[in-house]
Length: 373
Image (cartoon, rainbow, N blue to C red; front, side, top):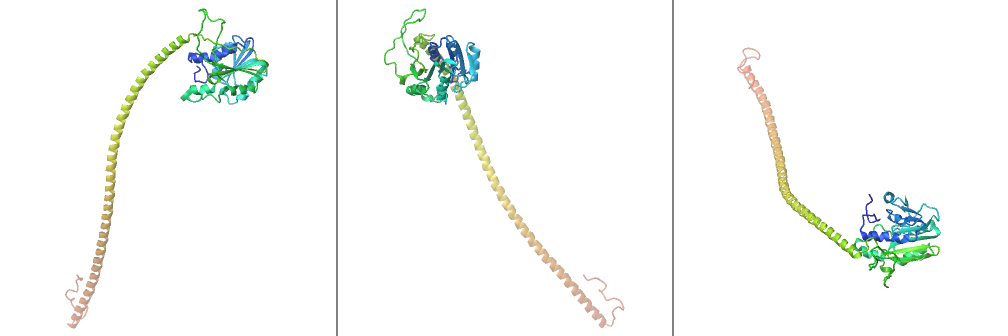
């Protein structure tokens, strides 16, 4: 299913004003299509090609969108539909008597090339009917929406006519407007009749669209056309449109109430989440402070432990030094005792000899058979 994106009209998916605005151009072009070989360049979804086929000998519709071309083939069996670029038309020179290009040129970068291609595929006396929005009106009408993202360049009236006269010797520029009027016709419908336009309604700067009929031969008579769409009672159409808008507004207000309720619930939930987050942050700050204090205490205890270790080591070193001194003193004392023991033994031996005994004879001297204590 083709969706309406604003780039091309899709029947049934656009409101009546937009639909009639586009269809009326094809009704205008149909007056020049009778018995002709017609190319609808930039045919979109094909509704205009089908309108031209009511009068033309043959109609070929071509569009760059494969999706639009496929949709046109499914819905309009009369014309032939092709997928291709309008700046490189796949047709021989002089293949068509009429080329229609409505709301195409402003979408293209190669606008001069497109006009030249239209001229190439036209017969020497063929017609080009081309339309484009008036950039002065269009920019104002779009307002805050800004430029149309699908448009490369839009024209003012003189600029548009000059671009067309670069390829065609005869150009008739028409203005397309949606005009309110009062009609007088029998219930059976409008047949013939007369259209009287009040003077002052021909300001190109204020026109909605420009429609140009171009040829390199003498142009046929280009009569003004007042197109009355199927719904011809504009007042009734507006009333119905207002009712539709009221219904849409009521639906949007209902949606707004629902969305507002959803928003309020979301805000309440957000506040609860914020409170929980704040509480969590407070707890995290408290834990962080406790961890910081614990870390500082650990550092303090580690310092105390290192100091105690150092003090213990110093005490141990002192004790070991004192112990070594005492050991050295004990060893020295033992050596001194041995020396004294030897001296005592010599003294005793000497006394023993002086007492008339010889060493090695008789009983041992008292105490000499015992080890020194």
